[in-house]
Length: 199
Image (cartoon, rainbow, N blue to C red; front, top):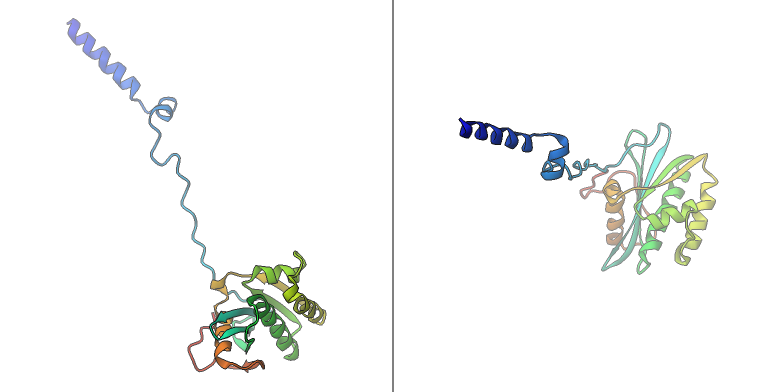
């Protein structure tokens, strides 16, 4: 009889020790997921249409063994291609190519009669310099000044940074500019005959 009582007591003590009480379980054996962070949300980056009545200029520069080049793409608030342009810049630094693309794109938009403009580029130095958030590097100081002067002719103009994934069309045109090998701006009112993904 005593053996049976001892066995019952031991069973009760074991049950108490291994209960799922928060105070005991958190000290002895934490849940395997307790210290892990929740999975991060995947964010897909893509080109987005501007506000109604506004055109968006995407700008980019490229560097290849041939040299540097600049390109821009202007699209409407419905996403349709309005105009694209590119030029070869020989051995210019990439910052010069990026800033040249912005200036060329704004000039083209203004010449086409647009005054409400959103500009996107994937070079943070150029965008921040235009916004006045950093001092423009000396190589692009005159181009930044040109861009600011041109901006005064707009009713509304916004400058935003985007990631490369949201700037593919301008990147394609900029790279295409190195194959043109012309320092004069070449315009496209329709996508070039080669594969051109406007998004």
